[in-house]
Length: 496
Image (tube, rainbow, N blue to C red; front, side):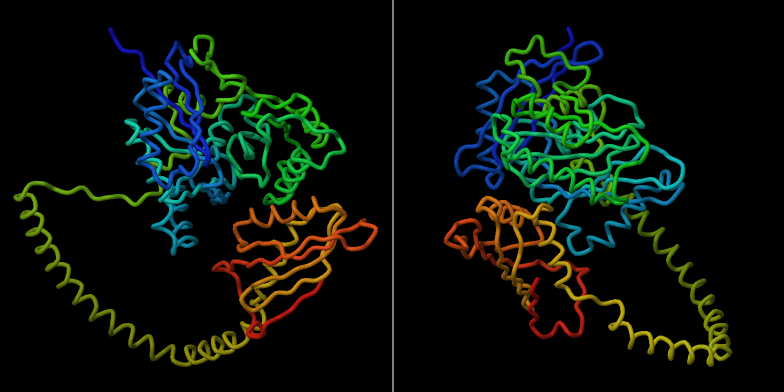
């Protein structure tokens, strides 16, 4: 009698692992086990073997028996960028994206693992979502699974799997919001393909309860962040004229009132999603509660159906191809002799061809002598004038990141801003409440382009206590594409 196929889905975050075991049933699957493994204090991916052994004990205690698994990461470990491919790219999409990776990530190529999700074939330009993960994290997750006695068949992003698990028309734009303990992630699906995936800089309460309409809490931050993300998309907004909806995959037992408030504030129809299409939870020994285990279940179900994830960092299509070694000594000897014969023939022909080409080029160089002199003169003039036109001060990028951290409403403002030559920043200002200052401070700390963010003081600005004064310091991390003007050699101080 054939053994029933099983697959384990593991949704990994910085604090826990959500596990769902799915058994193949008819055209879909049935969840047989579900549970959450919370890391002990001080434990994490930095000790993958110890973490894997603890996970193995947890799985055995809860009755999990699957030996194969699919791992999903949280978006905070990933970088996702939309890339536009030329019309008619077709099967050359992978090669084009490989060239983009070599150009943009030349310095970090060995430290990152890349893969991409390609938009369905379309007329005109075609987009792809390029995803990168630190190779260190991929190796740690692989080592953790090995210590737990599991074979990893794929490694992807949890939110990306959920974005591909929803139903709806292929031409409908969907905002996919994934809420889980301590975090929130947003993906955008348009024209049948993924356009964006991002971790939102806010903390979601574990119980997901709604707050009073006047409260300036996590729901207001969520609404503001979603509006900001949509506004900053390439082109500004989603495709005009297409239907839109917001899909919420909630793993925090969200209050239904929160969903209704999001629908009102974003002016979008909202649909609460619980289980991936085709999954039956009726026979689970530990049945999932709502969408509490949705990401892990979606990964396991897709693997059982033979549908690889849109992005698989374990089997990257952008990885360098490895040549196969030949084990036979005879084959090696024959290959060496053949290579020597071919190399000798090629060198002889190439030597004769080079002599003829050198003579032709020398004759052509004499004819082009005047044109070359004129071209060198133009190059010298352009090189001399370039620094005055295409360079920009690096502090402009710094001021942009600071501006994006402040809310649109006038509850907090800056009165003084100082930027030093080494991009150390000291800013001060006022706000209507201490909460507004702490919110801006959290956003600055969540920005990967800023470091050493710390408050200098937060105190009452006057005796009436109507406003608070604050000051904070930080350091802006300059990217490779940040230009410096000739005047940037001296420290600069800016006020706003």
